[in-house]
Length: 365
Image 1 (cartoon, rainbow, N blue to C red):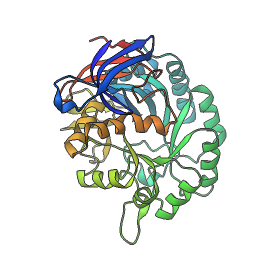
Image 2 (cartoon, helix red, strand yellow):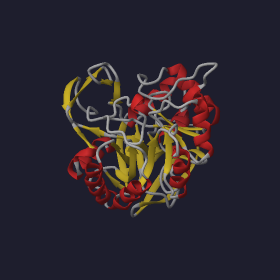
Image 3 (cartoon, helix red, strand yellow):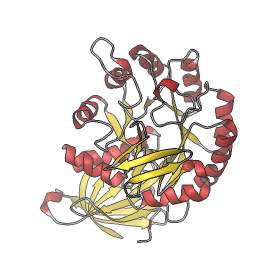
Image 4 (tube, one colour):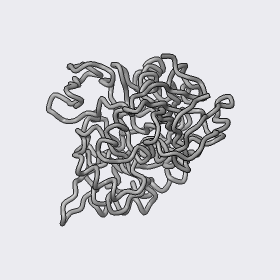
């Protein structure tokens, strides 16, 4: 049983939460304003829909590395995640997804739950790779269906500006896969057309896409004008705080991701990874030419950054739990209600993680 200030769908409640096996059983609590007490905060477990790695490992390396990544991020409050891959040849992705499929079916011990896969590439524009490897190829529906049989593909990032991609967006959407616009040189009009064909969101808004200008609104303009959902990396490096506030005001269900690389959890330094060198310095992760290549962010830091930006703790929590759950159509995670998964993050009054429960069980300290 846990006691504290619980953030429920009906607001803050002070009282207790009891588990029933792997689920939330009962909540016995009364309305409260947390400023009136010193009890810890109990929030829904964080959900990261775009995450690559940690501790020198990433999801492209196989099940053992994937388990290590999911363990590190679980200690920072992430209880569910999408294992995010990067572009690679067909044989490599096939092998990677076969291993990830097994982890999606059974949660690794002491680790966050893998609720599916996010394919970030290889179906993107080579002119906006950002930190992705140059293994670009056209969208192939049969190839994606094969991948989906190996592991549940929940999200695909693609560039919509190529001929035929709009129709493929509709096909993928009908199969229950969220298509996100990203790594794109497309225009505002390309973005609006993609949304009209069923594209669900945007990958790391502002980054690796055409920017907003007053006579050429670009892909950023399409997102700000029309999107209901979009990712954003709140490390205060990828996006200026002022631009973050614009996005928060424009996109109703903006949610936050880490886009964490192998450098998460490691000290500053240079790391040779998959034939390339990533440098981590003061939170920024870059390639040798200075291009940002993901982040070293964890979700607890993301939450604190949002509060620092001026969001209430309730709103910040929604951006890292409820909104991404709703984006995937999952009502069993991202909220503290009886019957939901027993995923709870306990924070002290300075918003530091004290304890994490997944499926009703505490993570080892």
